[in-house]
Length: 259
Image 1 (spheres, rainbow, N blue to C red):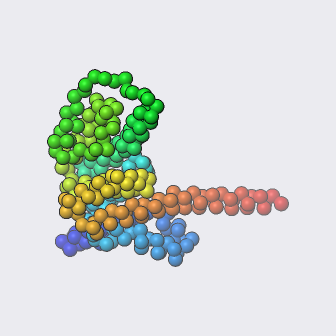
Image 2: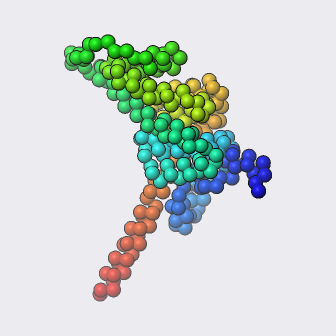
Image 3: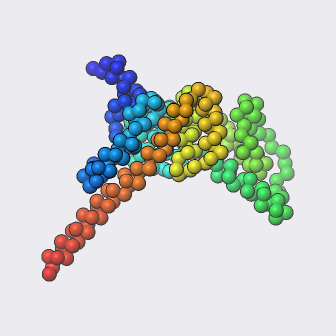
């Protein structure tokens, strides 16, 4: 039976059951290059052993980084969903992360809509839509102080669709399934991920995270989790390299046997 101290250690990530961001490729890497593998494993599993963030939060961030619409890594998503469940995450908490991973695609409009308005103005082109459209979800966000001025350009271009999107996104964040601090930490991870690197969002969510009580150390831990996600290159490539080496060796053996 696990003691309360055992549960506390597990909750803070002091003794992770899984090898952080790694899959079975680590064993092959340890065989091929044990020195580098040992150094890399220590660095990449640090967020699981440092105790700065609870183990469940670490795994939810792992789900976020792998399931993000800018990444879509099926193996990593499954690995971290499994680990998050084992760390005590609920279906609703993980589902919220997946919803957040979906709506981060709004940054396509955050980036592209202002450029469209600028280039249209330079070309002397004006939108054909002239009717006034009600935008209750947008107005609600403004009233709650949650509006982001980066959204103004696409309200101007397509207010009806923008309001639909804001209603979709707003329903996620209003649910309070996870704490406001964890929401901001997840948002930092989405925006700081090496597959995204959306600077305005990183700054906005770091500012918000500090306001709701996150420490600098906790935010740095999120950035570390973004970095250690880089070992997916080994998770992907090492097994392929092993397969191709085996295939090449077999081909050479057959070729040599024919002489």
